[in-house]
Length: 164
Image 1 (tube, rainbow, N blue to C red):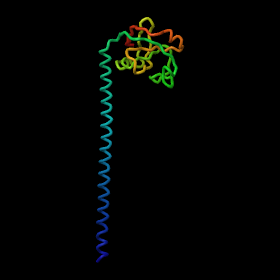
Image 2 (image 1 turned 45 degrees about the vertical axis):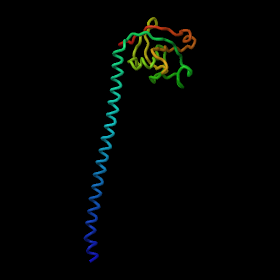
Image 3 (image 1 turned 60 degrees about the vertical axis):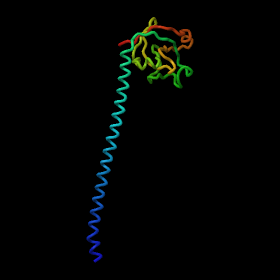
Image 4 (image 1 turned 180 degrees about the vertical axis):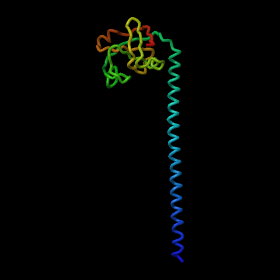
């Protein structure tokens, strides 16, 4: 009698185990799907946040006058004036003549890497670097020669962000 019971019960037990395994697999698939949806939702939220930030920056840039009076100074590639790699600018490009660093308030108003700026009496420069956070309404002209940079000094000059 016991053997008949074992023979009858074993297939039922095996079927139950298979059914439970299928249920667990289906539940795991649903969990994986939910984790994937959550990841996509988080990425979408982050992308929307960045879009809002960029929109605010662009709105500030549109409302800010393209010509303004700024303090203009000069700098050269030394670790005392830059960071640990003075030959690489904040734009991740090499420093070079004809480029400038701008204060972060100007940068946040659309004076971004690659844009051209006309500095009254000095010419047209390309924005390639950022200045230290402590500076506002300021432009730093890159110069290779330290003496030339010191002689340039500090000037209040009109600067215009160009649309080219």
